[in-house]
Every structure is written in C-alpha cells, then in structure tokens.
Amino acid sequence: MQRILFILAVAVTLLFGADKAYAQRDLPGQTGIQFTTGGVNHFLSWKSGGLHYFTSLAFTRTNRNRTHWLYGLDYQIKEYTYEGKAIPKAQFTGELGYFIPVLADKGRNVCLRVGLSALGGFETVNWGASLLHDGATATNGDSFIYGGGLTAAFDVYLTDRIVFLLQVKERALFGTDAGNFHTQIGLGLRVIIN
Image: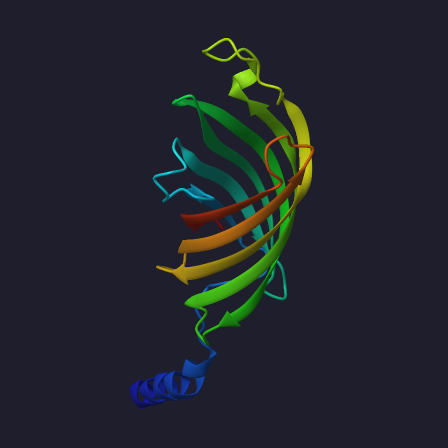
C-alpha cells in the first residue's frame, strides 16, 4: 500500500509540478564574466588599411526585473595610413552600462537587449610619439576621453551557464582628436559564475 501511495504521489508531483520548472537563466543576483572581441568601423574595407578591432572584458550582474548592470574594460585600436605606414590610435576605456531585455522567448534561450553605457578613459595617437617616420609631426596627441555608448546585444544561451553574444555598439566619445563616433560589431562569450 505504501508503495502505491508513493508512486501516486510521484505521478501527481510530476503532472502538476512540471510547469513550475524553469531554466536557471536571468535570475536575480546572477553574476557573469564576459569577453567580447570584434571589428571597429570599416574593419572589412580593404581601403581603410591597418588594424581596426576591439576587445572587452566585463562583469555583469542581473537585477530582479531581468535587467543587468555591466562593468567593463575596453581596448580599441584603429590604424590610419599615412605615406603607406600605419599610425595607430588606441583607446583604453572603462564602461558602466545598464541593459534591458526587449525581446525574448519563453524559455529565455534567446534574448535581445538594449543598453546605455557611460564611458571614460585614455586615448593615445602613435603611442605618444609625435614625430612620424618621414620627419612630419603629428598634431593629434594623447588625451582623456569621455562619452557614452548605445548597444544592441543578442544573447543565446548555449547552456544555463554559457551565453553566446552578438553585439553592435555605437560609441560617442569626446576629448578625442580623431573621430567622435565609432561603431563596434563583436562576438563574445559570457560565463555565469554563480
């Protein structure tokens, strides 16, 4: 009799409790580390010459309403050609961003997020050397930069703890000598650590 009651209790639990099981995704307090890399502006154009890429390391924390905060460090380099030689412009920035989910499926396997970020950091042109290879002087110098960014991020959960990222970010930075707006297109991974 006890065996029949046990089997009946398990069957009832499975029937009525099955709709309560959810994946462990976007839970309040979840933290993650993400690494993103990609291209900047005209990175696919052969005419632009030189390197145009960025790399980013960030820490994320999910809030109660499935939004999340992002705290990150970015490195971006864009090379300009002068007399056939590359002149690098590198930016080192810190980022503080807030992301909200716009679209997601019911199981939270796929999510489109939009976020705003505050950015601040340092920019160096030609690694601080003002004298160019042909004797000319670069008028653009090193400077502190500040501004913001608008990001559209597409998250795909590969497992409950590993997220594949595709993101497009438009950065508007001021205090720079060589272009205020930069578009970043990148791929990355986020690992949920708790």
